[in-house]
Image (tube, rainbow, N blue to C red; front, top):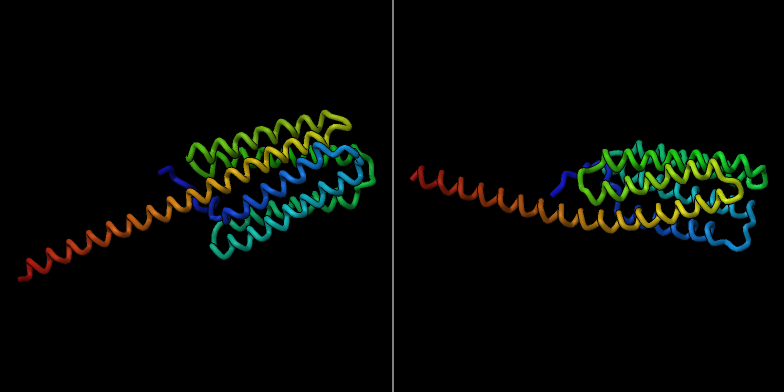
Length: 207
């Protein structure tokens, strides 16, 4: 079984599933919204990021209880919250401001996912999932920066990819936990048998 960095996967698997569902819902809305009401869509993206921030704060609390990796979750939650509030409060402002903000956010998040993919585990499935998502995020960040009125659509496409990867990772994370639990039980059972055999040998020698 591949080595897994417990600090990364100690987030509950439901965290990834919930984030994936939220990302897919908002991503689909921003990509396929027929009205194209920019202020409303911008506010909707801000609300999505605010939801992401709340989920990440819950993740930080969960990690704090596990005494591992909570600081990373807090930093991500703060970044999400700041960008979310900025978008919501400036929904009616110039679109250029929103373009730069969403472009920077998408690129930074994509880069962080690439780093997480390489640092979190040597499991090829986990690594491919997050590195792929990160590469798409970095590309979309650049595409958003060089786009005009389509920047919301690009962001929506990225959210669909992010949501799909989060859902997939959540399910795979759950499977990894089950495998990890079974492996620990088997290891504990073998250790118990070894101790019993050693105890029997000592008893025989004492006789």
